[in-house]
Length: 122
Length: 189
Image (cartoon, each protein chain N blue to C red):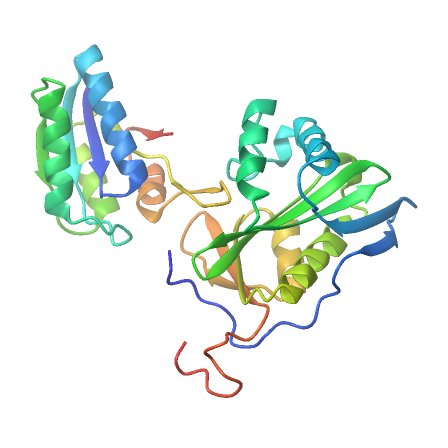
């Protein structure tokens, strides 16, 4: 399957990265990792790219890691449409100290606007 | 998550527990602060184990006794503030303030057998009274925007919406004046 994994440097996005890479290695997915600009993330995009490349290399995958500029949600939806991805994978939300999960604005936009299936990784 | 906004004005005084009242079903209810491990802890495990999954919100309370105990261990810690609504020796409801930086996150749960009887209002007021007495300054919460009953309860209490950009509304309340804010000059906030 042709999978687009969007990550921006939040904890849940790294969880999504690890799980998607792991799964792609087993399922032989055609995986692209898009590093987006998440304003809520404190991790530098270059560092996110490095982390993604390391995960891909470690799994022995031939997956592209791409830095994407502009509004994260709309760029992910646009890339998925233009390049005919079949699934978008994102982090499953931020967990507060209380244990409450909140879904970020990127995930909300992608869920509502993508034509593909969307997976949120817990 | 440190850019949360709070109302300028400090909320009214809330009553500190213990608080006794008769609910709309004529049951005698008492709200008391959680006093550490023991009977109170096990009563909460029982309440959450029997909690209607339809009343879960944003992943809590978790399902299954093991995950319930892990969650309770985290939110019943010494740095957290908790109150329980008791009906005899049964926990009918529970409300909690969990520290998050310079503020506290609030959550409240009422068991399905005790809902729509006015317990939630007393419980949240009791928790905020407890927090006020303990010197808590800022409280925030998130609530699913379709949960009208909860949103109107929070508004009635004095919470103001601070972020409406996501699925969940974020709301804030100022319980006590910040030490460094002073009485009249709030410009540093």
